[in-house]
Amino acid sequence: MIARPQKHSLTLRGHRTSVSLEREFWQAFRDIAAERGQPVNALAAEIDESRGTDAGLASAIRVYVLNHFRK
Image: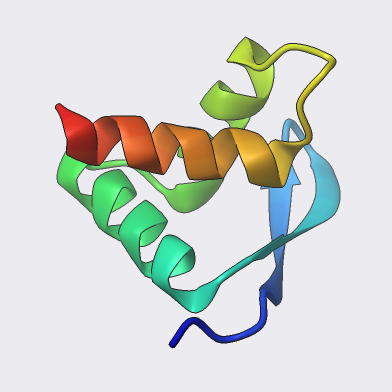
């Protein structure tokens, strides 16, 4: 069973923001960042820069995680 989303703070280009993701997505996101040898904030900033204005950051991270594990 998936738990309720957990809110975490991130710093993107010097600005603090919070993102709510399910625990499983947070863990997968951390694993991907570690695999790439970069901090979570850096990976989040990359995703933030590449997302369109139609998608929120949390949604963009979920899609990124999904696509990563589909490959």
